[in-house]
Length: 168
Image 1 (spheres, helix red, strand yellow):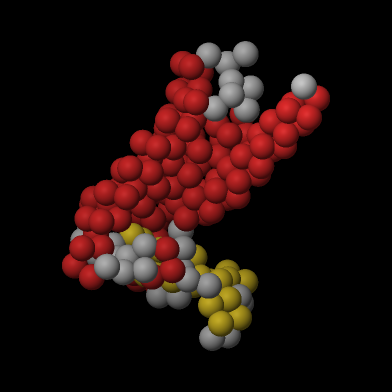
Image 2 (image 1 turned 60 degrees about the vertical axis):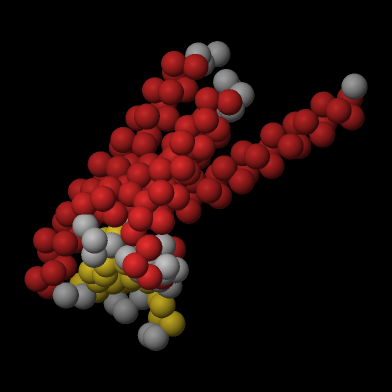
């Protein structure tokens, strides 16, 4: 059974790996896409395009307060996710992975907010013709996938509790 130290280690490792992968891809995007412009990957459907997002997900913007407000929210979220990882059942590796990836994604975008007032570096553009999903990055993928897995993990825990209460 994993100890509290093992859970902290897994959480920290996932956060660190996510931040490193996110930083490397953003550095590549800034260096390459600033010169090349839009790079088609799968025709018009998937392309790489450099965008700076001073707001939050889906372009949510709070004006001149955006940078500091979203920076603060990210710090609070990372602290809460760390606590969630510590209080998860020791055998719930799914929970550990999910909160690690969500926190890693939040930390990746937090680094952008600290490093630049331009905003978060986004570069993955998906859509068909003029119908496009908001441009995103590796950190956003980690947050989204981690959140989906976290929801599943929480649902699974609720199902286990319901089964346990029925059998008692």
